[in-house]
Length: 197
Image (tube, rainbow, N blue to C red; front, side, top):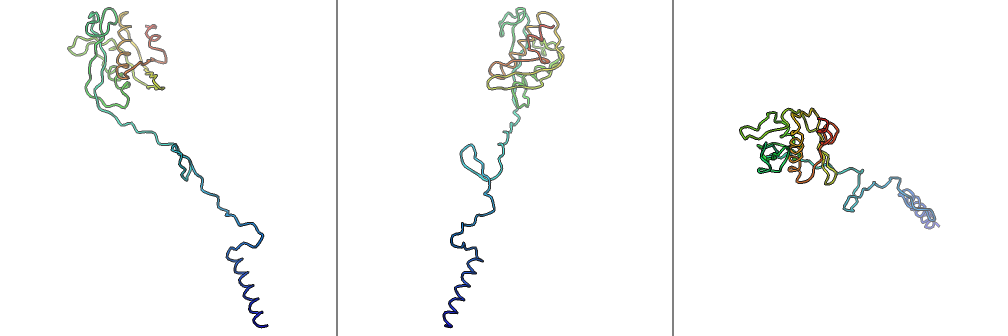
């Protein structure tokens, strides 16, 4: 009788300890954790990683030091030294000194617009933009389409300066972009801005 009592006590103690240590009573559903699983994000490669979603950092564009090519006018040259423009003139490519830039189109136009003398040194080349005070405000790139936006005052000395200015700006920008570039001045297309002069 004493052995049966001891066995009953041991069995009861084991049952109680099982409940205290997280055991599941027969017929009861298994306990679920109250802690939600960590969220996961899928990267572009398809793998999952824990943590909140975040955009990849923008690539850092480091400044480049290089020369740029700008265009000036050989008056009366008749297209001998470069493309024929204006009233029988030529547009002539000139390589600048080294400048620091992150966008080559912006750098070439900025270099061209910084010159406010009528002639380029002793070269005999004319700058039809010399009286204008224009600045590059932005360069928009949408796929292969590039638009350079300029603001400021456009000054034209005579009728022949319209095509000279147009070609100085366009050829300089297109050389830097290695392709077509559209130009606006104070929100108007280049041809519209020149037609008002």
